[in-house]
Amino acid sequence: MIEIRAVTKSYDGRPALDDLTLSVAAGEALAVLGASGSGKSTLLNLVAGLDRPTGGTVTVAGTRVDDLSETALARYRRARVGMVFQFFNLLDDLTVLDNVLLPAQLSRTPRRAARDRAEELLGKLGVLRHARAFPGRLSGGERQRVAVARALMNRPPLLLADEPTGALDTASAADVRDLLAELNAEGQTMLLVTHDTALAAACATRTIELADGRVTRMVTR
Ligand SMILES: Nc1ncnc2c1ncn2[C@@H]1O[C@H](COP(=O)(O)OP(=O)(O)OP(=O)(O)O)[C@@H](O)[C@H]1O
Ligand SMILES: [Mg+2]
Image 1 (cartoon, rainbow, N blue to C red):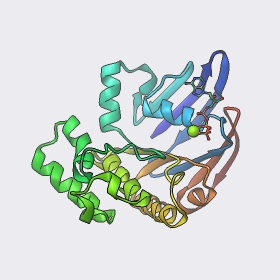
Image 2 (cartoon, rainbow, N blue to C red):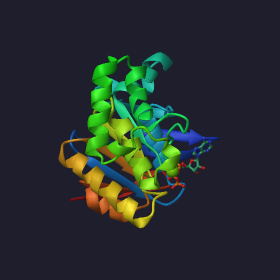
Image 3 (tube, protein in one colour):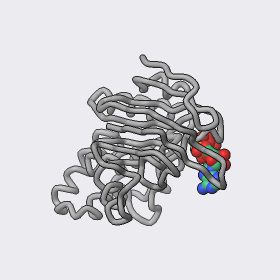
Image 4 (cartoon, rainbow, N blue to C red):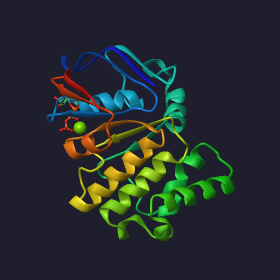
């Protein structure tokens, strides 16, 4: 699903990722651990097509992401990857339902099918009763579950998450851990960047640790 070959990403001549080679198979949940500044978000951004490597290649589900035009990248991000962030990134003046519908609208999914899918996801994630509410009314854990629903809306082959439990209280973090573990058990491939070793333990099939943009440890469950 993900093939990273000899990837370097430098900022002002300093490598944030240093000759990194890594692959993730379909169905895997890879957790990326590492100290602040070790290159975790940089790695995620390259896979998400939010940034380009200085050298090397990034291939996701057969597509060379580092090579795509801006238009093709926008389509790639819409169709191939779902993203979950530490601070949810929900739009506060749209309802929960409309937030979840957004990716479907961008990819022109018929309205009825999109609504059915959104309600199914909100139900599965336990937040359907908040469908008409605005995100500001929800708890952190509820907001993150809405963000996961939005990320899954277009059935992306790859789910990416950057510190998905980083802003949550203990109980909500446990909910989100369970949810991600369940999604992976159902076959969802994912790449999780986190400081949360409990998250890695709960749902990663493999864990790597980065230091200075290099893999220093790899543990397979
Ligand atoms: N846009 C940028 N411009 C300049 N330097 C950057 C940029 N993005 C990241 N860096 C640098 O690259 C290195 C890796 O950053 P990155 O954000 O990937 O770390 P991280 O492992 O995600 O850290 P954290 O755990 O704090 O989120 C850091 O030294 C950072 O300062
Ligand atoms: Mg980061």
